[in-house]
Length: 383
Picture 1: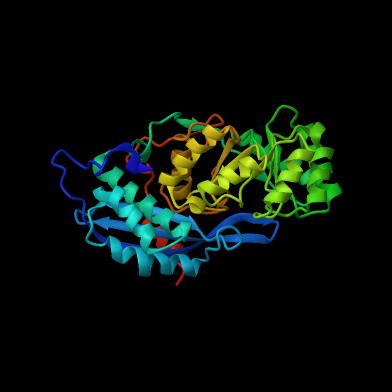
Picture 2: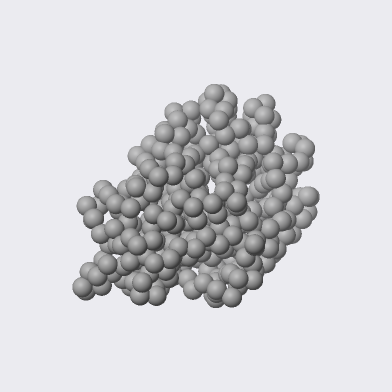
C-alpha cells in the first residue's frame, strides 16, 4: 500500500503547495468495439465505461476509467456513476489531492466494495498528482521494473480458420502472444481450434480463457486433450467461487490453471494458491485500484504465482495506460498483458497507446502519460 512507503503526501512542486480538488465529474460513456466479443455469459458490442475527471483549483486535470462488469465485479454503468457521483466525489471536493495516502482508506470506509469506482477515482487522483508534479504515475506508486510490455491478443471467432487468419493479421501488426476464448463453443471444436492455431503459430505463446464457462469434467478434458498444443495456461475454467473444483482440477492435470474472476481480494489470491492455481489475472477494477494491485503483485511473487495483467474488455487508452503502469511496476507479468484499447473502433485520447516492434512502451509524459480528447468524451457520453 502507499502507506507502507512512509509518505504522507505526494510532491507537486517546490513549495509543496496544496493541490486542492475543486471538481469531480462522473462521465458514463459507450465506446464502440471494432467487432463484438463473445465470452461465456455475455457478448459485448460496446464498452459501457465510467470516466472520472478530477480538476484541481489551478486547472490541472486528472482522468480515470473503469469498465462496467456485471458478470465479474457486479458493477453496472449506473452503479459506477452513482458510486462516484454520490459517494466518492463529495468526499474529495475541497481536499488536498497530495494527501491521497490518507484520503484513500477514508473513501474505502465510506463506500464498501465498488472496486471499479474506487479504481477510477484513484487513477484520476494519481494522474492529477503526476501532472501537477511532472512525475509519471508509476513513479508515484512503485519503482519501475520494466519500461515496456509485450501485449496479447484475444482470438474468439466462430471457426479455426477465422482464428488463424486473424492471428496472422495481428502478427503483422506486431502481436505475438494470443489467448483463445473458450467455453462458448462445443468442447471438441474448441480443442480442434487450439491445435489449429498452434499449428499455424508453432513458436508463439498461446493460452486459453473460459471465463467460468466450463464444468469440471469439461475443464479436465480440455486441459488434457490440448496438452500437445502447449498452452501456457488455461484461465478461469470453473465458476469464480468453485475453489473445491479448482483443487480437483489442478490435481488432475499438469497444465497450469489460472484464475481471474475468482480474484477480488488478497485473500482470494491466497485461497487460489492453496487450491493449486499456478497464476492469477490482476485487474484494477477487481482490486480497487493500482495501489492495491501493486501490492497484489508482490503477494503473487511471494506465493510463487505467475501473473497476467489485464484491462477489462474494452477500456480506452486511459485504463490501458494504467494497466501498463501496473504491468511495469509488479515484480513479474510472465503470463502476459492485455491492453484492451486495441479492440475499440474509436478511442478517447488524442494519441492511443501504440504498439511498436511488438511492445507497448510506458509513456514518457506525467501522470498516465496520455492526453484525453474531451470532444471525443462528449461524443461518446451517454445521458
